Image 1 (cartoon, helix red, strand yellow):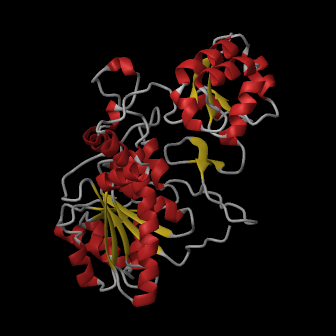
Image 2 (tube, one colour):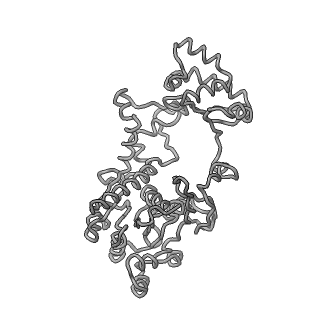
Image 3 (cartoon, helix red, strand yellow):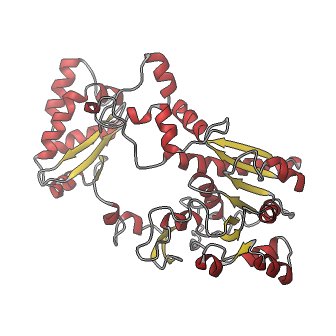
Length: 412
């Protein structure tokens, strides 16, 4: 694929998920992304999961593949000045900085603007007032863990494994950066985009109708276990002990499910009793799930998994077998098919399936994704290319331990 954003240089000074994901999205569309970290690694450099043996963070490798890495001693004034110089370096397509550092710290937008007037800063935050937050604390404040899990839990919260707001914030930050860069191309003006994680969460819940729902109902949505809110869907067990997820959102999904399971007569009786057309409205299937679920429980439970698969073959039934990620990455499985993944060897010493951009452009092939860098691997290259430093200047920074390359950080 032609590297669409190859004329852009993004500098990243960030940790954890949202801000690094923003830059990763842009890197996978061809942008040059230069990440600077504290010598020895930032707060996420050793974050789990880690590689057996080496202890390298597979998490860090995943979010930073395809980027260039510079290691700087950010605890010293000289190192901080170097970070500011990198973020605000001159040149067309530069002056784009992604961070989650505090808004009033040494990487404040005002300081960057002093160095480059058209600077664009994308700052991922916790709460809009600067209060710290992560996905799980935002969820706790907004009541999401009290809507998750079986109804029998009462007031006990259930956290979920996927950091949804971090992911949404990272994706939105990439979109917002491109909007700001487009505006700068038209007007010459830069600016700071602040993207609080909590605002992403609150806006998303509102966009999905949940703020209006609470306002109208006067109460939060109750827990419903594995039932799909507002439509027919939940997990069911087969005769051989496998579990499957079945969802019927559309008319065809529902009618094909009823036909494939042979429960048409029972469903018709329920419709006659209630005076409803269950195929016409997914909400009715949700409202009457206590009548419908037992029918599907019995029909699925009477079949082995292979019998169920044969009954669903060629139909519009939406379903999937519950499995593990380990099973999903095997040969012929979804993750290993379709061209999204390439097996690459990373600094951890492990070779594993590595994704490129999930988006494709019609008639163009995906680029092979880049591996993750070693911490500080590109320090000298970036200082020379971006800041136009000569070898003597770079050597002096090394001698003063203001910057580091990969070998130096490994010794640390």
